[in-house]
Length: 474
Image (cartoon, rainbow, N blue to C red; front, side):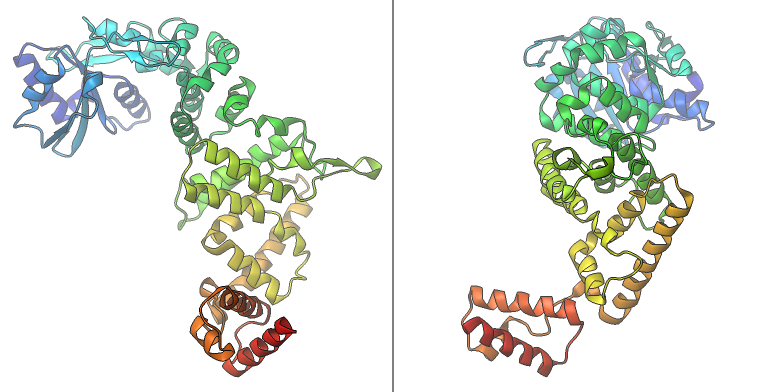
C-alpha cells in the first residue's frame, strides 16, 4: 500500500505539511479502493481525484493550503470539505466526521469526529472505509475488512446494512452501481436490507437518484447491476416500467420475456457502441433507449388467435412513457427528447421488408431521425435478439442494404440538410402572402414534396406549389 501512495508527489508533500503543523492526514475512501484495484490489474498508482480526511478543521486546512495550492474552493465547507487543485491534481480534504442523520429528510446533522475511526464507521461500504496515513509511517487503517472484501469481490457495510441504508437510502442504489463498476457481489444481508427497505428510496430527490442510475448505465457491463436493481424492488420505486416488462411475453416467442430481451438489447447496443470508433462512448442516450425502447408493450398487449400476442403501436405509447419517466427523473430536455424519439422510431425499420421502401420512405427515415440516425442504426440492429441464426443474418443483411441506400441517397442529395426547394420569401412572393401560418403550411407541403420526389427544379417546385395552393382555396 505504501508504494501506491509514494507514487503521488502531491500526497507526499501534503502529508508533510499537515504533519509539520501537528495534524493527521489520510488518503481515504474511493481513492484507496481504486488505487488497490489499479495495482491488482498491474497499473499501480492513485487514480483520479483524491479524497483526504484530517483532524484539522476547515479553516485550518485553508490556512495550510494558502500559498501552496494553485486554487481552493469551499463550496462544501459547511460539511467540512475544502477542495484544492495542486499542480493539476484535484484533492478534496474533509475534516473527520461523525454525522448523525435525520431519518425523515436524510439531512445529516454535521458533527466533527474525534478520530479516524469515527470517520470510517459512517461510510457506506467496507471497501470505501479504508485509509492510508500520509504521515511518514504510511499506516494502513482497515477496521472493517474492506481489503479482504475487495479481494473477495464482496460488498458489505461497516455496520448493519439496515442502519446504513436508513441513514442514506441512496446507498442502496450505490450498491447497485458498485456491482457494475467494481464487479462486487453484495452480501446476503445487504441484499435482504435493500429488498426490505427499497421503499425508503422514495425519500431521495430525483436528481440524486438519476445521477446514480446514469452512473450505473454508463459502466462497461451494467446488466448484473440492473438485475439486482429489479430483483430488490428498487426499480419499482425508480423505474417501474422496467420490472413491468417481466411478465410480457414478446410477440416472436423467442425470449422468456420482454424484460430479458431489453437487457440483451442493452448488451448488444453497448457492444456496437464500443466497436464504433466514431461513437461517443459511453453513450447514455443510446443505453437508455436500448433499455426502455419496449416499455410501451405492457399497455398495448393483446391476445390474438392461435395463442399469439401483439403489441400494436407500442412504440407510440412507449415514447410517451419514456418522456414522462425521464422527465420525472430530471433528465435534461435534450436527453428526454432524444430517448423518446429513438423509442418512437425503433420499430419503423420492420416496414422495410426485404427492401420494398421507396426512396421517399428512405428519405423520411433519415430526416425523421436527424442527428440521432447513428444511434438509431445501433438500436435497430441491437433489437434483433433472435436465437435463429438464419433469421438474425437475414435481418442484419437487410439493414445493411438500408444503410447502403441511405448512403447512396445522402451522397446525391445531402439528406442531413433537407429543405424545401423554395424558401419562405419565395413562397410569399409567389402566392402573394404576408408572413403568417399559411406560409408555414406551404413550406411544410414543399418539404413533404422534397422528401417524396427528391430535389426539384425551381419551375417544377413553383408549379407544384401553385397547384397545391389552388386546391387549398377551392
